[in-house]
Image (tube, rainbow, N blue to C red):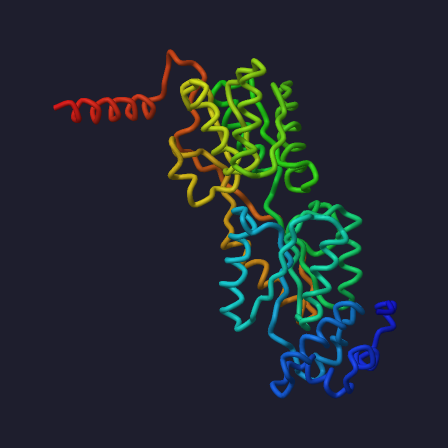
Length: 361
């Protein structure tokens, strides 16, 4: 099919390349019921290939909003993207908006562009992009969206686009200061892939906050967000002879892998090594031991996204948002001096001993 520059594509072009009348294209755009599924799919495929975006101003004047959000997201097998999608859908339901989702496996410009164009072909009223994007790529995505409002969730906080992100500086500072207050100095960073903007921000902020205390990471490990990558990298670290006081993990899933690697190597958490995760997944409280972590309020993120995007759709101006995070203290961190354990640690050990004695009776 011949490619037409997006700004010059009209409804009549879509009709001609689809082999249908312009009235049929109009009915597809307006989601009329008297169009066959075969024809609808053909027209929508043509709109996506030509990068045709319906004239939003005309839709607004005609009162023909689709009451549909588009959501382009990274891998939904990971905790943070799946919780974000669930929270957005829940809040969108409150406003009687549907959510059309397009998931990508690779976070690059071409793949993200294809996902966004697919969503635009569904005549969405606004877009949420939860894919890690470099500055230039995010600006490119905003450009192809034309006058359709777009909100980014995984970009640099300094980028001049509409965005809502969790505060990476606050989250990393809370983790670093918690470990330093416990007396830890030999701290390993278990980072996510540096191709991810959020992973890079956490890594940079961890390093900055350690440097404020004249400290450097004992070692830097790079996982891919999965539990297995955390297990693999910490196992390699231990085999290489590195024995840290503590590990800062860029998400809870990699922290889970780290806990297994430490356990298999004979290290006790938190007696020998303290571990802090990131995100506060629902499962993290059920880890053994329960994971100390940085909490992201995904329900708050979902509500903020929907309300922010609705305002943009109405033509209102909104400032970008840095959402606050909190430290959730559980059982994977303790003071570095084994001769002076905290009362909480002593209580846990006594309770465990009591249960073992009870089983012997």
